[in-house]
Image (cartoon, rainbow, N blue to C red; front, top):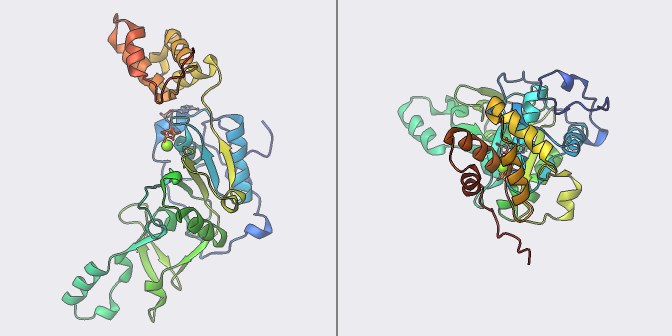
Length: 323
Ligand SMILES: Nc1ncnc2c1ncn2[C@@H]1O[C@H](COP(=O)(O)OP(=O)(O)OP(=O)(O)O)[C@@H](O)[C@H]1O
Ligand SMILES: [Mg+2]
């Protein structure tokens, strides 16, 4: 394993992130005061500890970490695009993954923060001194807004299914990732532009935003996933590190993944692995269909395993016609 790799795909936690060198000069960020890192696991421990990344994925994750660039992960359904984010957070001890699922209605603002003026107005109407009230109670940073807080180590931000977004979102995101900062006008307008706002790490997690601006310190590891339903503009691609995930290339690799997930339940499942592999030559299948089939056949006992497995592993797109 080359020495420069911090994330190795070993699935064992270690402190390799401490060896991350300073950023290239054009990607240095100086936000502060620096915040301590939130404790906790990745948020998806089973997936994180069973993931077997390709060598190319390992390399590109490290490239994104060194270069402080977002990682654009493409590939067919079920190839482990989303899981990669959890696996990196687990191995490098980067805390809970900040998950931002994207739909056609998602805006940049949703990811940055939400401000609840109605509740604030209501509360102000009941207190004697509305100007002194704690505005931070009505501001909650979203996953993107939280990832850009000035943490001492990179947070992991999963921008999941970015290809489903409105046409403007990728470019809006680029601007934020170039600057590594954003402003909260609700705070900058005030005489005192500092507030203890809530974060995406759950109830009770509050941090101080000073001067109405959030500026990152360690640039987050941003994992953006795409099923390839959208072509991204060259200006977007140029600013990302990219990796394309594929289905495991051989039966041995598939069998290793099944064993990783199911342990002894995976004994005597070679026939199903072979069947999955045969069928995947004729149409799209996803690895977790095989995991489901192995699990079910193990419990179904003497049933016709092959027929049952085929029902659990239907093609995800039209099968390729051999004739
Ligand atoms: N290389 C792998 N090693 C171990 N498990 C894997 C691997 N690839 C996929 N899986 C398993 O397959 C399942 C699907 O993975 P995941 O949800 O990350 O895929 P995806 O590419 O994000 O799919 P989609 O495009 O549908 O969102 C998970 O249970 C994951 O653990
Ligand atoms: Mg996914």
